[in-house]
Length: 404
Image (cartoon, rainbow, N blue to C red; front, side):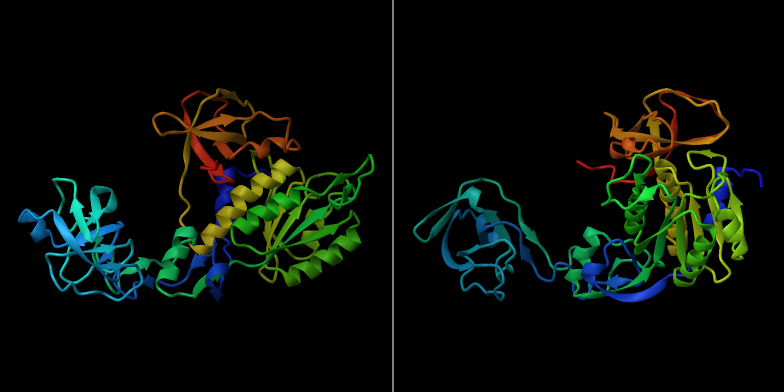
């Protein structure tokens, strides 16, 4: 089969989504998952007239009449029932988060007053009525939608869900995946490799990516024995809805996977994409519906394919809108082959607030050291060979762009 173009391969992957499970999960276990319900305010936000500064509360009308000194009637901490003042010409000392007393409407912070004995004196000439008070329902009303179904849950959403008493949420769960490494040269990471061996490593980067997408993962390794590989793979396909293979998919004498997958009845949708890295990338669907991603074994190739294709597959399946990120090159790149080039780069923000990409030209798809200092891949289209400083291209992140 001839190479297909990147956009065609991406569209094929996205056109074969999984059907997510719907589960009720404890709030603490929902980070990174997709919300499957609307969350509505169970009371006004804030639920009462809330003081926002430590200081004194007064009736503004008294200050407006020229009164600047107020006898202190009471001291009110946060977390106490609402108090009703007995004399509006007096004040109360009040703390941040407390309910505004009935009969008072304005708060002056401690920095702007002095207190002698039981009298507070305002030391500034100008104050605003109702200042430093967050009034009931100012943010949201009872029944307002706070979070819409379909969003990915992060730290801010945890705050909101907790504030309305949602100890559990209905969320969408991607299928569990198994990440399979192949090759006699690979040994466990705790082993001391012989001169002809290397430790398994690329699978851990792919695992971390999949975990970020909300996918639970297991690990498995297969040596280069076709009969054993076929038996193992047949069993794993029955167990997992998502199979991610690493290595054994190119044209080497021991790259058995394409042949094994065909013998197992897996429908191949494409094998080989007109891209660098990751040309041997293979994608198909097993007879039972399991989705199979067979990634090249080189670490950068497998990491790139997972970052681009598996992330797009998850987003398409969960109906999460993929936001397009554009970056501006700050270094000239020349890449003559007519391939889509996924180039590792670090991201900065220039003085105009524009994301700028600093590319790393490494030593091929086995050179994964640059991944530690890169933020993602800038996508350079196949129809060009010269990419100029200042030109803007699509970008696929694999880490938080605003890391410290």
